[in-house]
Image 1 (cartoon, rainbow, N blue to C red):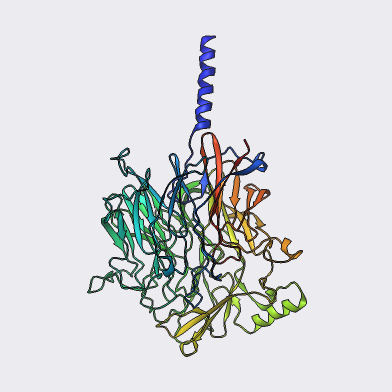
Image 2 (image 1 turned 180 degrees about the vertical axis):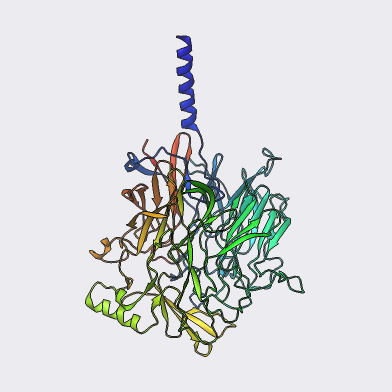
Length: 640
């Protein structure tokens, strides 16, 4: 009996310990290779209806301002955009860390939301027309785990600094850079305030940080280099740099400055620690919408997934998803690292979603597609004098597209015959056709548009079921090239130094609704083992965006991304109706929703501390959203 009692006591202790176990979310994508997956499973399909707000934290860091129509769109003036609170917190050990649109960092008690410390880098926000911060990074120094700065938090700022903070105190780590700060603009050509920012977190590979940059790259030629740099996590010393010039061309000019106008890496970088690989998603070459001056030279690595050696920065392989990209179809999302089993064979893969709604599944070791990709002819007529076009573009056979690939006048939609006719007339006055129709002086409707399809907040991968979950936008963008002599006063991208500026606006009817059929946002699941679409459902409604009864139309305009838990729940906000929702990953059924004070245009995250699972979302609006700017960080948990 004593043995039985001992066994039962051991099981009880084990169960209690498991319940008290901390389940972290230690980087932006949960893992260093993304995925937005949480192993926490306390919240299930059966009890998710009992979710309630556990705590809120407000930083005070937000501003009202102009609403922009596209990610990174300057609007042709110097007025400040509304702030974009799109940060995803990270949970490391016993502390939750997050950054605000003004680059302040808060450390919170993850169970209560109580502040432990706050750090202010004192960025001059009057010089920043666009504001955001996706996340901070975490690194634990194995040689000094309990000492000062044994745990470091890294912050990239809008004014191009990388700052190392002590995770316990929020004080700067003096041995990093100069008194805890590193000027990331070193080695670059001169640029104007607001043109060069750090908005995505540094990737961490052992004791190395890898950092890219956001560049407002449709303003002018001669923009700073898009160089990717690897830095010592303790000192900030440069280990290597990769400037995306074609093979055989020098990465620096005679003055030692990194060559200008190279494609940048503004989104989130992934690392494969086992293979010592850094995998980056690149932007498209500048200026975004006219490539006649590129000569094919600076297109070599644009709109590509690029694998780099983590020790040297040497290119191991690259795969281009758009050839000679003149549509701003750059890679917006973190390359997601997951093992996939296809026809009984398991391979390490990179899953890359795109603004086109196309998904590329690549072999992580070679860069070759694991599902067939076809090079298909694309439109060659139209465009503008001086432009040249790629004759073909890559189209994955699987997974199938998650967005209609192109538009014709027959796709015009409206609430009434009148607004539908207005939309049809506008389409008939422009160049229309399949995806990759050249942009012209008549104008085209990009459908999918240059904001997606997919964008930076997606995808999530259910590591249990091998499902990829992604949200997709279905709203067109009217884009027109305008000869330089007619550019004065234009509301759009100036593209200074090129023959054309760009006019741009969402493709909307006189009622302010998209001119294409709803739903205008969807949530989908793809089986990565087969490439098959499992389900698609509308995401959100038009509440707060249209009057009743139109406000109940399914599938409202969105920006953000999903996360998924081991219990088979998808959490996503991303909708203009200001709700966060939970869906069943098996069938897309909506199980729970809560309306927040404003839209949650970030990626939710989840963790477990003290035997309780939390789901946390930043609700603060976005500069593309009509919802008010705000500063709510909201944590949900099951009612106690």
